[in-house]
Image 1 (cartoon, rainbow, N blue to C red):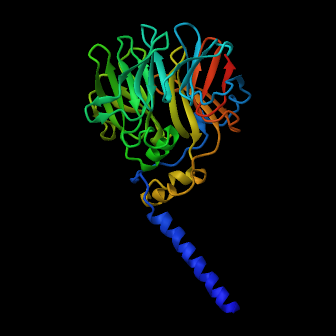
Image 2 (image 1 turned 30 degrees about the vertical axis):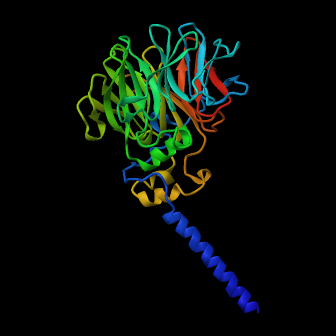
Amino acid sequence: MRVSVVRGGAGVALVLVAGVVGYLCLWPVPADPVAWSAGTPPGYVGVHAANTRLAGLRTIPLGEEFGPEQVAIGPDGRLYAAMTSGNLVRMQPDGTQQEVFAQTGGRVLGFDFDSDGRMIAADAMKGLLAIHPDSRVDLLADHVRAGDPIGYANSVVVAPDGTVYFTDASARFAPANWGGTYEASILDIIEQSATGRVLAYDPARKSIRIVAHGFSFANGIALSADGRSLFVSETGRYRVWKIDANAHDVDVRRGGAGTTVLLDNLPGYPDNLMRGRDGRIWVGLFKPRNPAADSLAGWPFLRKVLLRLPRSLLPLGRSYGHVFAIDESGKVVEDLQDPDGAYPETTGATETADRLYIQSLHARMIGWLPR
């Protein structure tokens, strides 16, 4: 009897183990990872030597809102912030008099203002939007052309001539179809198919030009002082590019003309790029690199197995606050870190004369430091 029970229990265990192995190896997942070379993580050394200059942030509570992915001062002198709820909240620079400026019904990840005072917003669910001072929301573009949708509008900058440059992070995983911006970004970065691109919208012709493509999750974008170059974060490959703003459909994977890797092998995932004062460009690293994740760069099958695990088990990196500023040559001129990661997922920084506001993917407040 006891032998039969033991044998029966062993049989059940084998079936369960076989089921788990089968699931981890065979269950369909939406991504089809490709091999790539991650390089050796540099760690926090040199210009990025560990420090605590970002620790002890002062904060502006946001009530029921969270996720100030980008914040910026508008033409009216007020502070605007894009929230996870789809609300665009505005307030005085000290955080008082908070109100909902507009609701897009999607998720704005980046915005800028044009010469007419409109907010030009990259909405990951909707596309490229124009939000008027009276809060009316107009769709500028959700397709490059027929059959070519803008699936993941991410960051935006408006040039003095009115041209709107923006990133389309992934042509493979649109947040509207894949569970939101965070889930879609995980799928894209694990897959590494490099379908992100930089687009240019001409408001006069209402047309879009592909500036460059081949980015592994095209993210933050900023314009050079002379308006001739764009700086672009490639989150999935830990680098920042400098590309010719007048380029036409250049494939950065092939080193096309007018494309240069400005920063490479960064210690974390670069997110927003924001112009600051005195020529500075602020870069946010929303998480540090994880050596375990980098070690799987050449193992597509194992990365596919990872996608079958609960998201809490993915090697996404620990909480670590980090923003830094560069000049247009790529020289790091300021570096601020909080190794304890008290303010989560630092996506970027907005610099004014007297404050440095820190952006975040999921925080329930806006962090800031006096300047």
